[in-house]
Length: 111
Image 1 (cartoon, rainbow, N blue to C red):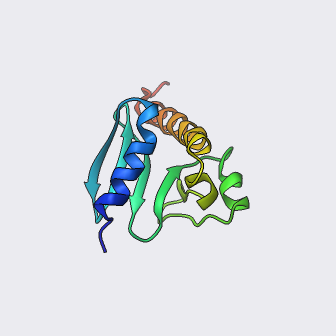
Image 2 (image 1 turned 90 degrees about the vertical axis):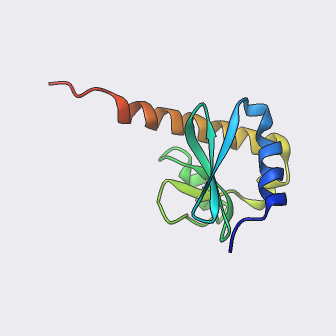
């Protein structure tokens, strides 16, 4: 089942304060990007998921959020989705995590 256009439009509207946020259709859902780096995804099974790391995964686990197919994305808690300020706080953390991970991937090999 594909993600509904109304839902993705709502998510994109809520994330507008992050600056240039874009979406790309992928596998019946969407990847959500900020500065060209994917920090979130929207899936038909789980809705909005944010990128996590060792420092933030506990917040998602404590809220009972499911893990997406990959360990690095977790479902956003319902109470976070209902609070625009809290959603942006969690989204900013996910953006930072995504950008740090992207820099690590592009770092040149040192001997």
